[in-house]
Structures are given as C-alpha cells and as structure tokens.
Length: 187
Ligand code: GLN
Image (cartoon, rainbow, N blue to C red; front, side, top):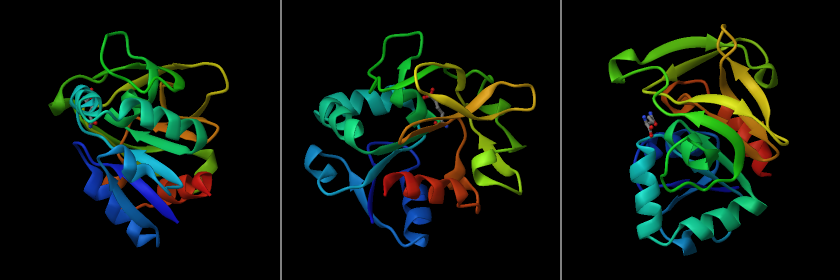
C-alpha cells in the first residue's frame, strides 16, 4: 500500500518511519503529482499557518481537497487544524472535516503534556498521547463523530468516514495502533 505524508513542514519523517515499519510504501508529498497512486495521506503536526501558506504557494490546496474527497486523510495536531472547516480565524485550510478547532487551546509550548486515552476503536491498553501546543476539537458536526476525549470530556480525536483528526502526536510514540487504524481506512 502506498501512503503519502504531506512534507511541506513539520513531523512528516516520524510518520514515514512508523508507516514503513508497518510495511507501507511512503511518498513525501510536495507537489500535486506526488498524490498520484496514493491510497491515503497524512497531514503532519507542525505549524498550521506555515503548512497552509506553503500549500497555497505550491498550488496544493485544490489538489489536496480533490484527493481528500476520494481517499483517506489523517491530520495530526497542526494537520488536524488544516483538515478542519473552522478554526475561528482566517488561515488557509482544506476545510473538509466537520470539526471546529481551537488552536493552542492548552496554552504555550511549556504546557505540553502526555496522558493515557481510552480509544474504543483501538481496544486495550489505553493509548499514550503526546500533546505539543495542541489544538482542541471543540465540536463535531455532520457525520463526524468523537473518537477520544480527555478524562474531562474535551474532544481530542474524531473520525468522519475515511478522515481522522487527532490533537496529539501518535508518530512520537512506539504505539502504532493509530497508524494501523489509518491504513485500514485507506484500504
Ligand atoms: N500550535 C500548532 C498550530 O497551531 C500545532 C502544534 C503541533 O502541530 N504540534 O498550528
């Protein structure tokens, strides 16, 4: 299976390593033609404004939207922001997923944290999640549904058909269950 990682900025190499460990062929996507033949695409964490501006500069916004209408997409952290329809401020977005996101909802870089999450789709044990200047998924609408919450109920993972959004960074831990789950969505 061929999976792309959007390689404009951010933690794309870490996603690539996990996917290759699972036997996927990985393509770094920087130009529209890099999307050819892919089964799915990961939008990595980083800085969503930078990723958005680079996507505009490389004429990628429309090709990414068209690809996403037909294929699996997974946005982690800044990638989840980029995938969403609403972030309360003007910045280039794919605007595909029916989630409303608050950027930097947990404070500054120093307020980054790790927590074990119950994710029913992944079963036991809980998933150890790393949050780095993370966004919060304030609400889901349409056919999007909540996949995981913090113990206080705030939403940190959502799924809408073949689209996934996680506030945290599964590529930074040794647990590859989210990547396996995404590869199944991409099949
Ligand atoms: N704070 C970043 C943003 O708003 C996201 C951080 C991350 O991807 N780790 O785009």
